[in-house]
Length: 81
Image (cartoon, rainbow, N blue to C red; front, side, top):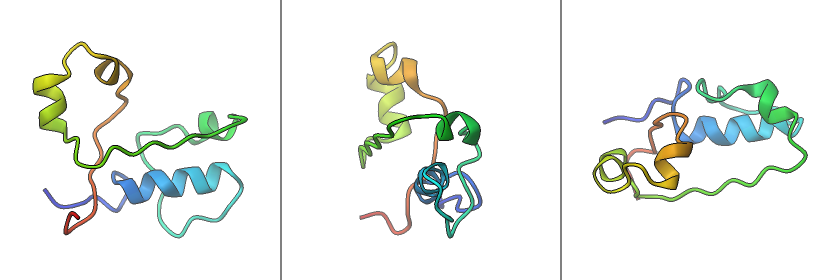
């Protein structure tokens, strides 16, 4: 799967945080994240669990805390590290 840099990747998640903090992001914001909701936050903590994977979460995390709080699936960078 190739990254969706138009609004569905980790790059866009970081761009959303930059925009919410009043900065000017160099990439589009994440389509699945409400910009107004994020900009109302007093504090933003971004935790990235690299390599977790959508398929792994579906197989192993069904019903767990991560699965309950999931908003959307996003892509990573290419090539992956």
